[in-house]
Image (tube, rainbow, N blue to C red; front, side, top):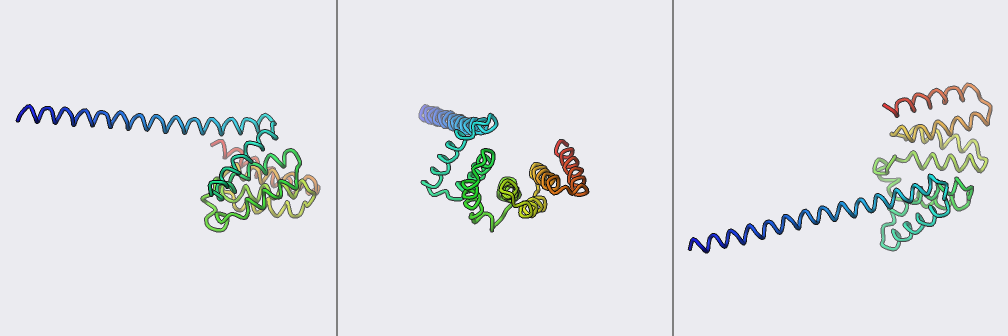
Length: 193
């Protein structure tokens, strides 16, 4: 009887140790996949930073197509803002407008904008940048001001204030240029704290 209990306990401990090893193996593998996904994302954004916009766009469009293929339309819409950023950099405005409209059509815009990384301010910023690049300065001013009202991150404020500075420089409105230059400087200082 005593031998039976010892062998039962030994088997139980063996099973528990195997389960613990399996648990740690699963954790290790999940961290490895997460690190792989993060490094792949870093590689894609490094392409953007290097100015390799065509390759960046190709990879982002591939990601959007895969999201749409598997039924993750909202994720595809959220990813499309990266395409807008690259398309505006290489001055392909018609395609940028298509991606802006695709991004804006998501239900997350209407539901809860705080669920979006950066909020709704990036949408307004890129719409403002698109309007500025295509020559609609008054519309650009409206969208940049909306971006400042909806920004809850300093990075979004910096972009919006910088856009407003460009507009007022073009309009030669020095008092507004000074105002948004000061606000830009203050936001930049606060972003470092």
